Image (tube, rainbow, N blue to C red; front, top):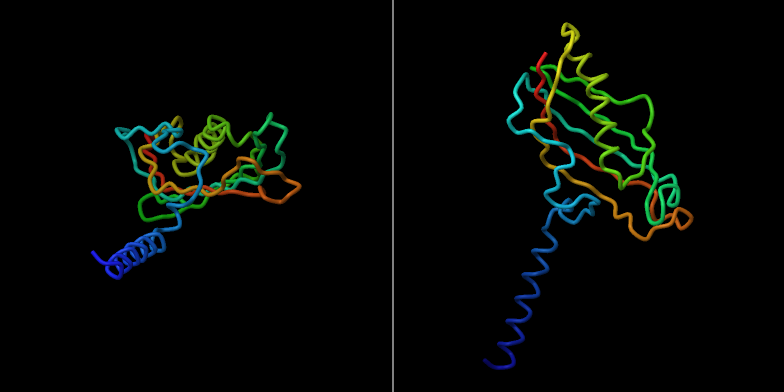
Length: 172
């Protein structure tokens, strides 16, 4: 293979790599504090009951980079969900943020599960006296925001988000 052919081959490979990188969906480049495949939500694919589905969006506003310990981040966590029951859609959001340490995924899960249990399910199933529910699935999970090595004063860690589709199985 001559110099000209080798140069053409190298350029062809570089162009191909550039096309692949440029066409990769932005969501695949998003940062995540959650390890790939981690099941922080306690999904039960065998959960039975009336299906309630829709998107859940979470927004994190960083309030401190020292309140939770060295290198950890205190945030105000806001979330909103739009759930579909049958042909009707309903939107839900708490009155205000939940303040917690971003890296504490158990606290995040507890806040969202508590809101679903105490607000969402009673509003969707008012006739039921003691409904229970399970999280059947979490799909299309995307998260943006790398929190390592940022400082509030520098303005490089101010807010982050996560979005996903959820399916609840409610037993009224």
